Image (tube, rainbow, N blue to C red; front, side, top):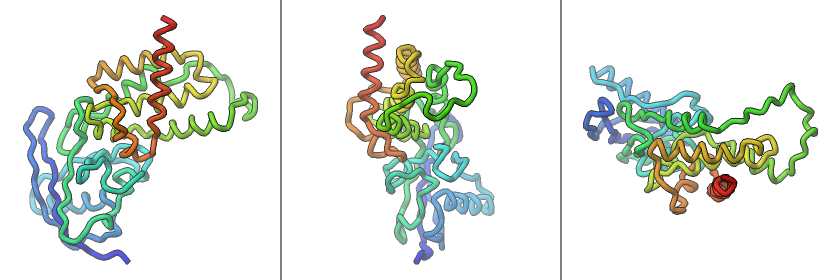
Length: 251
């Protein structure tokens, strides 16, 4: 049965991208362990507003683990100490009475801080725009069995497509690499026949845009896979490397 706990929140406050940030600590009392982590932040902000203070800025949208916007670094982990979930799916029952919870924004050159805990994640959108789509005119809705695709390939493509683009992979990587994200977006097309006509152009364009936006290189430490809320496999990175090398050989 969930109970109420008293906690301390050590949260990163930063008034703007070029302003020096700092940690501030707040106390919260009688927080239900059944509350989600974002609901706890809502309670904190209500308390701050009632005290005449400035609420903590953080990003969120669906609160259902789909949009990937709830990008918070909690106690040294992207999205918090639980596994295979986004921040909005994290509940306060994972924390103990009297615990101090440290909350930071994503730490990556590709994700500059906008304010407090909100970062600019538009770099991922730019990578998608560089090549993460299929431009073939497929006409109307085809019959489900008109293009035969092996079950294993379809499943791997769907697993890769589960990536929500939250940025946890880049935030946890010691190099700030976005390779897991890019490889997932390349793989979801590379595994299907609809994605093959543009495969070479896609791999080169997305990797080039990733490097242009300041993301680091992959050194295969596997931290991205461990912290990914959707359990995207690093085998996709191997597939991206093959796609990229094949494209370069064709050149």
